[in-house]
Length: 464
Image (cartoon, rainbow, N blue to C red; front, side, top):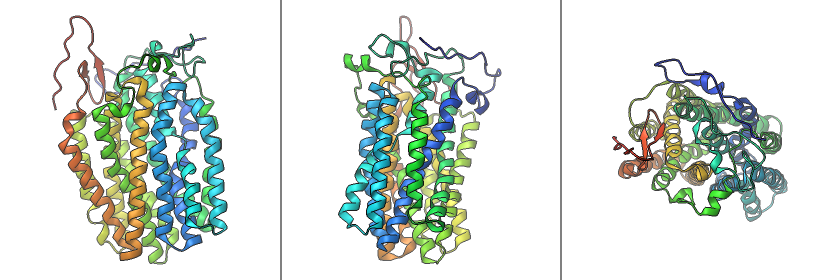
């Protein structure tokens, strides 16, 4: 049985489709709510590890190393998870992943509390990171499928339409679908950052007010409940592209697309901001004797990101996305520059808020670009390469910031976000030509695309 998702809600004439139109997409709430619940653990995992391992070992360097191992494992395995989800369906990847992640985090907690050596903690951190459910990329893939990226010709090769070969959403009938893709990217960035407002505060409160391991226990529980509920929403999932894989279509890997590779490097810088801020704020608040406000300060940083995402998604941009990407990384570099010199909690909160304002535009524009650059049959993998790059950048920054904090003082770790974003800015500037849409696709607005293939159609030149 085939379920066709349609909508009779047209956008108001002359007005850019906004959040209201996006959230009225049929079936959206069925995956948004469990997806939000399943996203919370991602914001709690590395911080929960830092707080627990620092408590049991007494070293931020050790805590950063374990947290970094988790992030590296996630970065390396996330694209494989996305690749499998593109080929076999999201549910087929989520169910075993949730089970493995829950068990691995439980083992890590037991080892940390029993005073296990570093090598044992690192060994447990690998499967804990590798099995992190890629809910964010899967939600983004669902939006792309529902709003204009799906096609029955890409369905499974078992003769059935829809998600996981079990019946799902066909290409949408709503005329504003492609125009809403940029709004969806902004909405997802806001949702991500809302989890980073709630998650760190929750993890810190549990670790400092209940038990040092309580944050990771809650993370594992939320992963199990949220992940299973999300996996159960099969009607809105994009189809498994087994047929496309069997035919060996062009760009069998999302990483073979030049623009995706550039964005992966750029997103390492965003990840470094998260990792550097996370460890540095923990070290700073520990140094001044107020560890309980760590989650609050990080929540303020994430709140800046969330507010910028809301504003960014509400604006009808006329400039090219890759130009906006350059501006966004310039802003991010500028706002992270003074953090290392701050020795006041109120001032650090203000500067953290400003730094957060620079993150959302970078993320939103990057995800908008990757949706344009990656073919549908590798789209989830493309999204996971970006989230994996964020995790890898976060891991490297956490390790470096932790060692700098141990060696040179609590504020030394704040130099890591500055250095990483400056390098990312240089990379994006030098390679921005690779972020242009492929031949056969034309701009139709902010991040939208119109396929111009066919007789009598010539793709217009891309103007930046």
